[in-house]
Length: 319
Image (cartoon, rainbow, N blue to C red; front, top):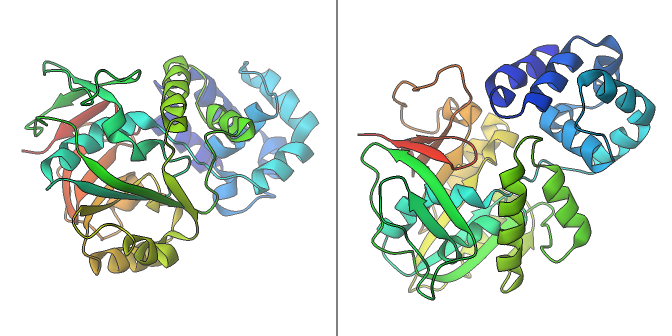
């Protein structure tokens, strides 16, 4: 477990959240906290999940000694809450990475997201976009209250307009409700200290979603995807996509999911992290431009097309 926390500190939190980097490094060298977190199993030990739960329950974004004292005092609460939680980050900025693929496919689209959380990535046509050194893109009805900016390099396809979405739905083990104060607090707790702009972006996306929230279905992604896909309109191009979801499945579970999706009349878009990169489901990747960091990748079907950061603020399209 210590190695997992040190890896999180060096590959994910470094340069992103000084607070989480310090916490993860501290936990890795603290026998008392290691003993307590070891009571949990599997993904419940995730640093980002444990830290988000602690912050939800009131842990201050303070230096590690303060965090350590708070954790030891409140461990029973943290443990109980962690068992009922999942890492349900719902970052709307990821739509900036998905957009070049979505806009290039035959319109209109039927969007089906697996692991949808609150469904904020199901609204790519409701946001405005600004790619560096490229024209701004706005919805047909005018500029969106949420502008997503992305530093895109390489031969990124330039969308002429935003996609036309005829149908949208999502699957999640425990969908979050954009109108629920409790679910909104959890989404905010999942944002790392030092990422203040994400809170503003999340609030803007939530306001947009509340004017027409996507349909979200509770269920397992593999068991539910075919049934929900069958409800999409036949005259729309069906897109099945996921963002940082398959990392929580075992390699056999990923392959079952991939086999299920490959049999559906749909285009499959993946936006996933490094553990999924190496699972054998996708064609080989070019060398990473930042091998020390946990970059995500984007794939259409089994063909990787780009690297991206996990939040959709930068991407590099392959030549």
